[in-house]
Length: 96
Image (cartoon, rainbow, N blue to C red; front, side):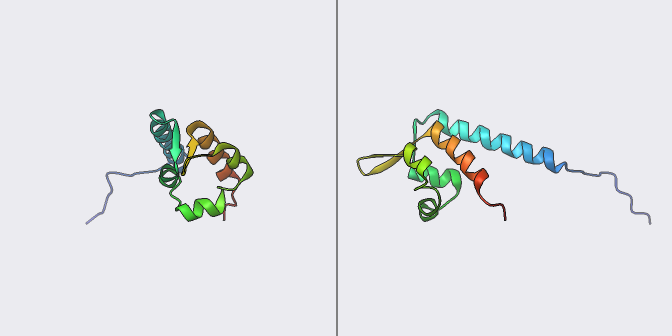
């Protein structure tokens, strides 16, 4: 018996990565459309980082300190500025 494949699937990794990045951008825009500010909980969801990790990595970055605001007891982060900062910050991280 001869085993012949009728279907062959090839995946272009670069095209797949571009599609994923496009969908992430669309989701970030969608999340930001109805919000003026992110909360710390939003940041945790967007970055998939814990509160502790956020505090230990970029929360005290001098550029992020200029963005963040404390309103009463709650931290808020303007959406557009925060997205711009996070995209820049992540490119600066070592890729191990």
